[in-house]
Length: 368
Image 1 (tube, rainbow, N blue to C red):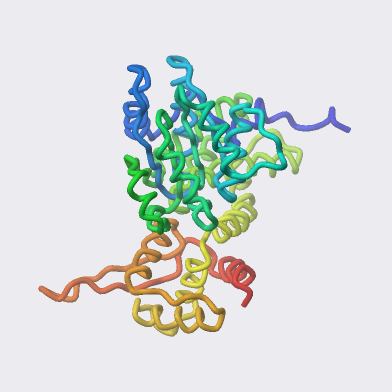
Image 2: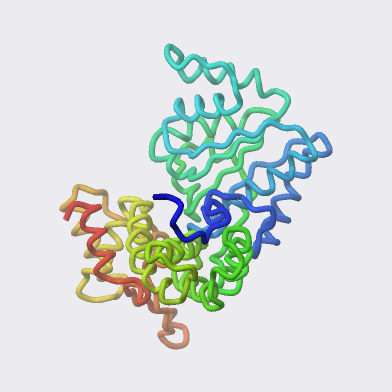
């Protein structure tokens, strides 16, 4: 059953978004900036808090893990990484367990766990809060307040939202957590091709991929807002298609077959990551009679009222539109109105993503 099968992969795990390679492509500037801040540890000092922002698939998490792995070669400092999706108590417990602190799973409150954590991290600790915007939907500001006021702790927050700190309403947190921001832009086609070429050399046996496969995967991912995860998924699934057909060489035709299936998963994940306001706004753009921001704004507030959601301010609408544009889920056409009259906007669904796929995912997600 298992002997008679095509052997294409040398190590399929290399194509996983969770894999941290020895070499990273297209992120030299961000790696250098991150390394310089963390290098204060080599002098016995505590680095400043850091905030890593950029769209999904732009290499934020893999760069942080890559630099921290290299840092461990030079200085012995504990690192605790967690996906910041939970209450302050849940995240505090997760961070403590990651550092191998002995924490009873029941019977303790936040203050009890914090006292243990505070005592055990007096010599210095790096805390990585990935997807940190999720913690602010609950009571995560409390945890960030405690962490940012503790000596010798460096907090590294990672978020897809450029305006993640706007979610914090506690002035004490905004006063104590003043991070240095490092921004990640989407990858371009050349950077994606370099990433895929490097990964494919480790992932596949020689001669498995036709010459056009990697450039095609890179070009298609570049149209998806430069999402490296999409590129890796596409290359991996293209090989799966080839194996499913019991062939030995991955072709461009395999990529196109894989594209449709990867596309559906990509859209589903993209919609799931959005906030409720972003989902309603995207739905409003798709269903508004006209494509001006004013019309979309009116349409949004009408839908929000029907769903019992708080209406948007004009400023918040502008912020959300820019985030959706950065994620590649909306296209904004900016045209000058003439000298001294400013710039007019027109909003469109993305031309590179199937409208029907997005509408189905949106309607299922917001219950319409």
